[in-house]
Each structure stands twice: as structure tokens, then as C-alpha cells.
Length: 318
Image (cartoon, rainbow, N blue to C red; front, side, top):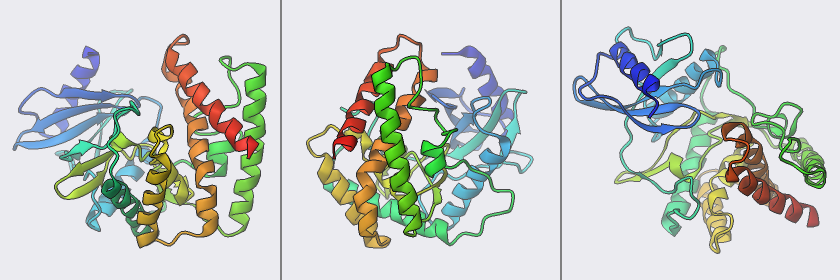
């Protein structure tokens, strides 16, 4: 454990009235997330936001959205105000802390695709949950200061994509760069046509992977809105399936999630036609995301790259 993080977490708790037991680090990826029971016996998740990853206004926007969703009855972690009535506390020049209510249940998947709970009922319900998320969001009136990144055409395929240029990098051979570049250009054209035919972007979760979908007695909840931004709604649905991409039940999962979504929010034929392309784009984006987050010889870089090459080649051969 990084004990400097532990110290910051304990300091952060003071802004929320103190804790009963020491914060326990449970996840450290973009943010450091701690399991904490605050005074008053309130269990929460404390987040120390990764320095430089999101601006304060973007973090405030995420919390505004999840609070608004919760007020509409949508199953999300509810932001918790500190003792001064604010949702953010600056712990140091590097760290901003936020606190959200604890969500009971277990994730339907993990970072390891081999540990994924596949269930017809869960997949159908997940599609409905994502559809309800988009319906509620579409009816919200957002404040003028609201700011989140783009997961639209430019955010995925433009000159400055959110997670980096998957078609560039020292880890790529020239032939691989060429494959990715051709796939990027072709996908860009398809998405531009999609936009011309009326497809609209919306504020989406953008990271509906298994570890961010909790199942409990009340049903399904979505957590970790840290990557939320403006994108095509179908991207949320595609992202929900990619961890089981190589599973023999993958197409069944896709069908069930799409059916569940269509039950509450109508899909057009072009949406379902482009579904596999959005799944591929997520894989391509992730192959760039992993590079700056691990050492240069980490095997994950090769694993993510190989997966992306496979998807790009299949896309180009169709």
C-alpha cells in the first residue's frame, strides 16, 4: 500500500467529520478509492482523485449528474457533502477528495474477463438500466458551468482522443500502425455518416464494464462515473459487452442488452448495425489507455494490442 495515500485519505476524512475505522484502500487506478465508515456509522467510498486527470469543474459536474440521477430514483452512488456543505475538499495541491455513499452488492465482472457473471436476466436488465439512464439524462436541465469530455467522434478518433492515439506509439510496428490508421479513417467516415443521419450525442457513463455494474437485492446499480462524457448512446451498450468479447456467449449478451435497452428506449436499425464498430472502438481506445499506466515491458500492453489488432482486422475484412 502507498502510505502517503493512506495519510491523505485519513486527512480527507476530517473534512467529513472523521472516521470510526481507518480508511481501507480498495482500488487504485485513475483514482484511489477507500472504504470508510464515517462517524455516525455511515459507510462511504472516499475518492482521492488522480492529480491532473480531471479538472475540478469536471469532478463537480460528475457529482451534479449523479446527484440529479439519484433524485430521479436512478440507482447510483449519491454524493455526500462535507461538514462545510461542499462536495469537494482540497486535501493538498495535488489531491481533491470526494465522498459517495456506499453501494451494496457485488460487481457482475472484474478486470479479468474470465471472471464474468453471464446471465440472461442480468444482461436484459442491464440494457434496461442503461436505457433508463439515457432517458432520465435527456430530460435534465444542466447548469451552464457543466463540463465533461467528449466520447463522440473526436473523443474516440480525432487528433486528440481522450485516451491517446491508438494508431501511434513506440510499442507498435509499422504494419500495425497502418492497420490502425486505416481502421480509424474508415470508422471516422462511418460515424460521420451516422451523425448526418440524425444520431445525437448525450451525456453517457462511458465505462459500463463489469466491475462498475453492481448486483444487489434491489437489482442493478451503476458506479464509477469518473469517465462520463458526451458520446453516442450506443457506445455505453457496446462498452458493457467488451469484457466478454471472446466468450462463446458474446453475441447472446449483445442481443439481450440491446433488447433490454430497446424495451425502454427505442433503437434504430443503424444503431444496432454500428454496435460492433463501437465495441471495436472501445478496444482500440483501451489499447492506448493501458500504455502510460504500466511499465514498458508489462505484458498487458501486448495483450491489449493483440486484441485491438484482431478487432481492427476483422472490421477491415468485412
